[in-house]
Amino acid sequence: MTEPNTPGETPPSTPAGRWSDLERPPLNARSLRRGLIRPGGLWTSFDVVDATGSTNSDLAERITRAAARGEPALAEGAVLVAEEQTAGRGRLDRRWSAPARSGLFFSVLLRPGPAVPVERYGWLPLLAGVAAATGLARGAGVDMSLKWPNDLLVTVAGEERKAGGILAERAGEDAVIMGIGLNVSLHASELPVATAGSLALANAVSLDRDTLLRSVLRSLESWYERWREAAGDPAASRLQEAYVAGCATLGRTVRAQLPGDRELVGEAAAVDGDGRLVVRTADGTRHPVGAGDVVHVRGV
Image 1 (spheres, rainbow, N blue to C red):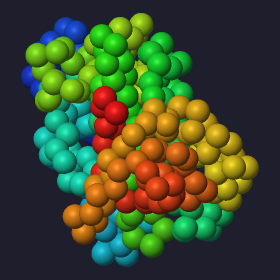
Image 2: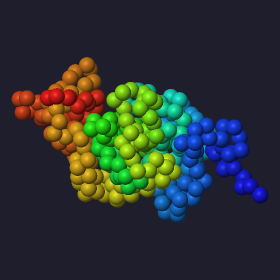
Image 3: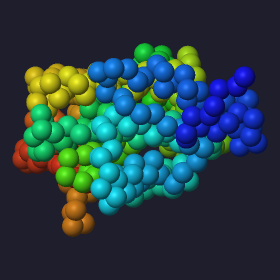
Image 4: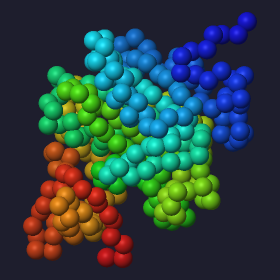
């Protein structure tokens, strides 16, 4: 007798569930669910869909729909994974797309309050970066670095390449939806831009997406619980220390594109207690940057 299909899973006997590329098997949602959801743990639900526009948007819609119907709020720890995103978004509404089953595209729902003051929520994308880099070092055997505030970098043929990104969005009064996208098995010919990278191109020892996703989510749970227990204090939780240690932006000359078409060029000197990048300009003035696009300036 076969087991009934869990909602959100594609039956393996259907055409949509068959592998179209033997290098890219589908995620084993049932096994992942068993391994991640446990009493007292952070993760409370786990769903995998074949394709969607954006996992962040889908979780936000679930929250809105529950509120409109007067239903209980979606519990913290909901995880939504897509085998393919057709309208994935990065910061500044940039598109994030990749072939089906070539990466990890997922969002999680977090409700840090009331333990964590709202003003410390800005650390969440940085926390996700530390957690992802830590989990992938363990699961993929590849060193990753962080580009402030939310890019995941790998080294390909001696060059830094972006292999992943993080997008945090507020949802309602107390919820944050954290989306993570990661290129896993993309070949050079499949990269959206020449400066992108993937775990495969960085010679990762494992490209098993089940293993990688489990490792990242366990790392995220560990860092999040430590941060929340410290009331979001980045120093007490050692989050600030870990982020600084893995941040490739610090010590580099950067160009920060700021709101209002302003630009700031200088050395990335520090990450302050609010998670902002401190840029020191030529005159020695230190400017905290909390929003904007930061570019590593080459050859300076």
